[in-house]
Picture 1 (tube, one colour):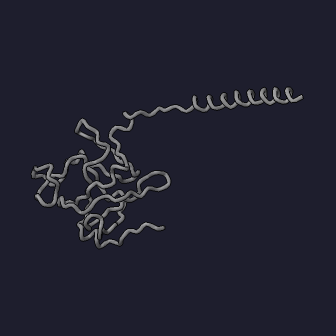
Picture 2 (spheres, helix red, strand yellow; picture 1 turned 120 degrees about the vertical axis):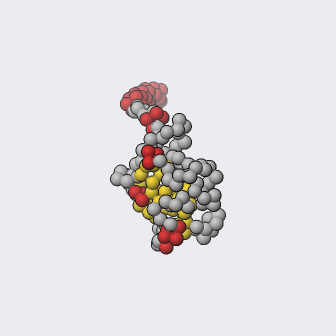
Picture 3 (cartoon, rainbow, N blue to C red; picture 1 turned 30 degrees about the vertical axis):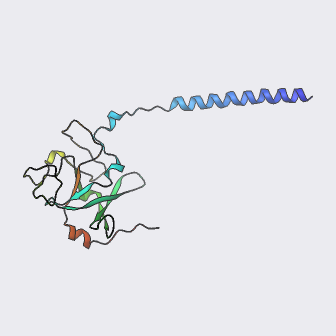
Length: 176
């Protein structure tokens, strides 16, 4: 009697196991990865946008991107910019709409030595229009990158505001 129960249990286990393997194999074969790295060419990684320096129209460094605010559908709605401070101390966080920020793949064109990075020493004050992109409307950005390398992040961001104007904005605080 015990042998019949053990045999029935073993047969039942084999039937369940084959059904489970069959169900698993049909699930894994229906999922296909149709996207490749090439289909994301020119896109930027969100993690790499954090820390990107923000300049105003006079090529003065006004802060850096501290965070990005995304809605439930995945569209970027706002950017948190850290203004002022030293090594994170005394930094004033402000949130601005994503469409107020323009991104550029080209290095900042320095007009003075103290307000821009050491790279880019030409006298032009703004990057070429063909390489500047905005996040207006859909929250996505596209780029016509003229260089052959894709860094997955822009060189810098630009905003039409001075450091004092940003500091006078209400401070952004994360709710708990």
